[in-house]
Length: 89
Image 1 (cartoon, rainbow, N blue to C red):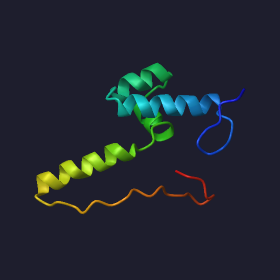
Image 2: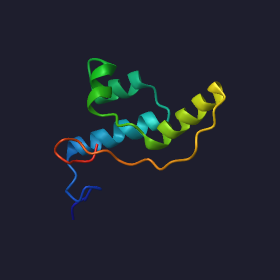
Image 3: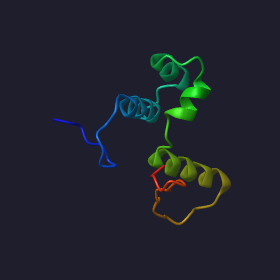
Image 4: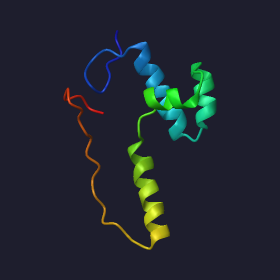
């Protein structure tokens, strides 16, 4: 039996590392700790390669900033972007 990812292909070890890093950061684990667990020399490399933006975290951050700025944005859906090769980012 194979583990099939959201893009319809078999998950690789790299996919699992990416998922771990993204989930750990979303759960509040600090970036330096996640970077250390993954064995990276620095946190910047880990963030550039593995940590995807968490859509809920982005929405929450924008809500907080709107509160600070005294503006209440209208709710809008988050639409996944595609890169030049038409792959979801």
